[in-house]
Length: 191
Image (tube, rainbow, N blue to C red; front, side, top):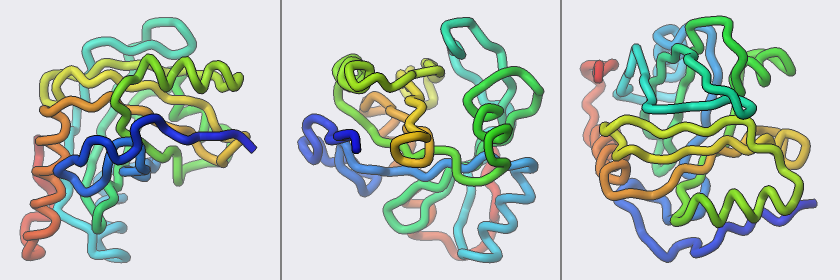
């Protein structure tokens, strides 16, 4: 069993309900993002959903090669946990297609926010964990750096590590507040 103890857990408290280093998100790969939104709402009452129909990142690579995959991503909160729905809109190789080919649609990853992505990457690489995907988001999340670690063998799902910054904290907090105050109207907020 591998040690996934993140450095500085709890050292920075976020506005979105989880401290640095704690699992803050469960990500799902879905075939149809709007259908998945409706199913999560019907089964679990989750909403409202922030939908980025044409999710863009500044740069991203898959297995060391630049990639241009098209994604639609929706996110909402269930308590202190973000639920993320990811629909890949093309057939390009990706960490999402890897999981779909392996076992179909469903849970893809757990996400943690880390204080220093380089330190955590080096720690996991030292354990022999492969990191097939890297990205830098756009300004909506403060140019947040992201790495996916392929931890399916160790914990059954991939692990997404997101580097903390105040802009992403604000965006995640906005989504969490919207879920806490939601009156059931306006299931989808298009971003």
